[in-house]
Image (cartoon, rainbow, N blue to C red; front, side):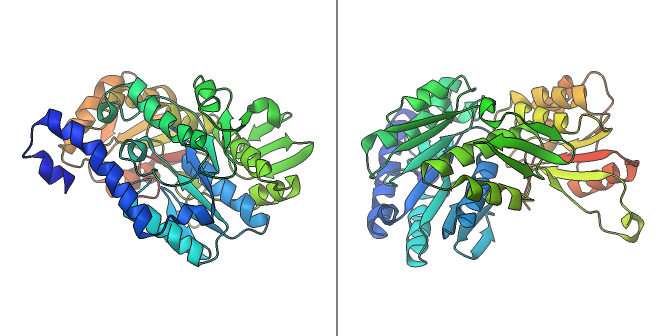
Amino acid sequence: MLYQIKKFIPKPLFDALAPIYHYLLALTGAITYRFPSRHLTVIGVTGTKGKSSTTEMLNAIFEAAGYKTAILGTIRFKVGDNSRPNKLKMTMPGRFFVHKFLREAVIDGCEIAILEISSEAAKQSRHRFIGLDGLIFTNLSPEHIESHGSFEKYRAAKLSIAKTLGRRLKERSVIVANAEDPAADLFLNAGAEEKYPYSLDSAKPFTITSEGICFTYKNTEIRSPLRGLFNLYNMLGAAVMAEAFAVSVMSIKEGLERLSLIKGRVEFVKVMGEEFKDQTFDVVVDYAHTSNSLTELYKTFADQRKICVLGNTGGGRDKWKRPEMAGVADSYCDEIILTNEDPYDEDPNKILEDMLPGIVNHQPKIIMDRREAIREAVSKANPGDAVLISGKGTDP
């Protein structure tokens, strides 16, 4: 409705009215569903990268500790034993949706609700009137710059989530932050009463191999089949938050070791078809949609020949990163196939044209049909290779 109104009123007036509109919607949603967050322990997860993985890890830990949980995030909506994929293309949907979800969690007897909270959600007050007990801050890098207007405004939107902890809406207010990120102090000092930084020092000694991650947490060895340094950071954030809520180290270990797959996040795929029954190469689907996350994905498969399938998002979203992400592929991949991702209202050919200046060392193949692009990549794979399909993750 707001976008229809936007067509008929001057932009300055629209910009002034939009925050009031969003705030009132959030208040109405909370009243309609009787402020459900008051009856749950609610933990938010925010940051540029790692929100979904950290959310799933934290959920696995709390489940191992015997808690009944709810999840609202990019990958799925889960209430107790019922889970369904998030196909809304929004990390955190609208205000009524969120408060209804939390009320359903209360009715189902959930004790813990874990919410991914994006900068767009904060900008549109979707987190308002949700009493957070805790918040995990994973990291911060440029994203959604067109939407927010600048990196500083993007950071401020993220920071506004942490500042809600300073309002003491719940008995406890806990912030867990990646101390190795330059923005960590801003989040740690945003108003939470309890502050818990984490860093790789908390995991030493650790090893990261093609078989997974082995690290030490509070003198306890934890082995995870998940791969990549980024996942070690995510596990640390989840572990520190769980421990802050009195979860034992043994439950942390059990939860993390039990979690063998996060959908659409470095997800290994078995190719269908008789000719691939003895598949001798890796096929991986990942949500990587920034240059940093793409770099970390490719570095995870450093010892393998990489055939990379990627594109970029349309709709005016962060056009500046198109050649940058292509440049990452140019640096790390052995073969590059550019394809359609989510063009929204943009010409998909123009999106790929914007990427091409970033590729100088390879001759990329352009296949607009994503299914055909993936088929081409798989057909090129030799034993030991890695076919890395990035961008959409669990999006259908």
